[in-house]
Image (cartoon, rainbow, N blue to C red; front, side, top):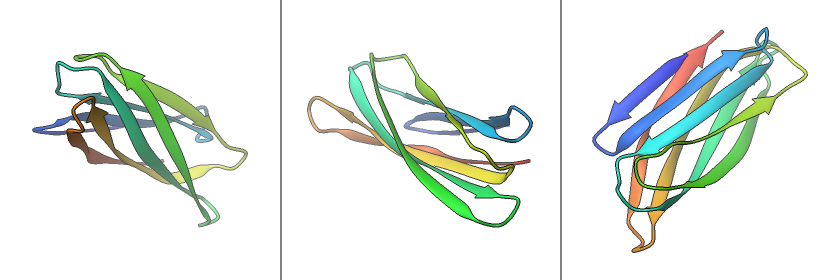
Length: 100
């Protein structure tokens, strides 16, 4: 798994299920409710790549998360995104990368 932190928040990415699934999470450092939009990029063992847009909403101090399932084995994955609060503030979360 990979966990990345910066002054704006924490992102985490994990490959599991025999290398066929990824789980992602993002927790921005904000006390306000937010909407998160991100991108998970997966490279498979056959060197093809798939990019998937992910999203979620959360309360200040909480994380959003999700899982993606694939029919092929994953070689590497990366995840990044931004959180938007009601006053249009956006928080860029750090890039997480992990390898299988």
